[in-house]
Image (cartoon, rainbow, N blue to C red; front, side):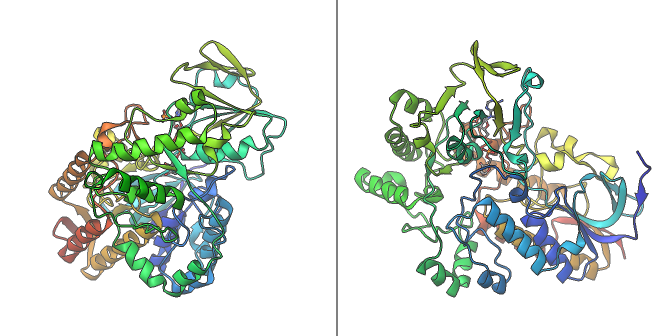
Length: 542
Ligand code: NA7
């Protein structure tokens, strides 16, 4: 390995990642006149939509809403072809944004950041890449993604398997041909649920290995070339304002249902409640999150929806035995991410699809020609892993980040992630992140815009005051963490195993990873923190 070499003078800002968060941060920093550089591990922009190219990959927030709002020209010139865009269109959109706002000139592609070390003498971050270059910067923003650190398959005997292997989140750029092949897929979260119906159409046979069944609802994707689409574009500001005042940043623009819940599920007569669920079922997508005020806090309220979706699932599958395996019974609906599908349950009515329930018979291991389950050998030509991510903390944990006193961020988070406002942590001056631990459960593009502007303001305030460093006070951070934990404890999330609590990663401390107080209250707290930055320690400089 060649020795590390330092490049150029000190930058104002390094942005890590060129997905939707990093692209916006870069744009914002350029507009503010900062010297900025962005590093991206992939060969192009797009983040999630660059890596997750598996068949059927598609967004499940409507595209009119899952898009940037910062440029009216961009909003007007871009035309989505579908209600929910597929991965190729989302990738094209991110490429268009990169070109339109001249972002590429400041992005180093195929470059992974391996470490960021705070130098207490110069009060700068020294950032090293996998190409062994080092850069010095005053501020560092990690826009590394919330669902970007894949769980690598780690099964006994996997190296024995001689067939093809794919990870949904590291899908090849060339099309994979499944025709005439026996394909196995492990994982039935949203990625598996999108890929399974598509792969079943071409594979000779598809075997699905399921450990936990998911609650899933029809997406009801369609063309977006509608009158409504144009009406929204004619008054985009109204939609953006409604999103900014909504809990999760999407308002169900194409649905005929109310986006803001006002009633408890239990105060509504059962027949009326059923009608409401049925309307939402017909409307499609994630509108069930907004059904009733107590849907995520009361077990009895939640159960009314759980029972409705379970009965719908049973209706969709012809073989009652298979249906029972696909019906979730041991956790509350919405406490694991709701999936929105296109013909997922119906796919099990096909002759060429078999469901293997790993709770009945676990995987024993892999062998040359396939997978052994409960002593039975299942021969396969291809195995696909749709096994999920180390959510929120994973991407930053995989980088050696060291703050004051050489303390490691990964080590700090071994007992539970910490943050103030879901963007910074004590002991790591001038280090910020977007859409990361402690950030709200919110439309990620709109969140990137809000956090990018907030970070920009923080940098310019510091510069105006001739100061060099800012970090949260321990007490501000402790209060934020407690608020997150307290809100989490009011919900049903801690009552099931789910990635929101870190349960999908063995040994990950159990702490709710998202701020579940809703975006409006999050914004209020960020605004109030930025009035005089009294919740922070500011040091260095005059
Ligand atoms: P998810 O939702 O975390 O799903 C991962 C799936 O993989 C889930 O069904 C897991 O079962 C399964 N899994 C993971 N490890 C194993 C092993 N060792 N054996 C069997 N099955 C396993 O990830 P996705 O990529 O589908 O979706 C991520 C998000 O992207 C989604 O929520 C949307 O927000 C978009 P388990 O549940 O652990 O029993």
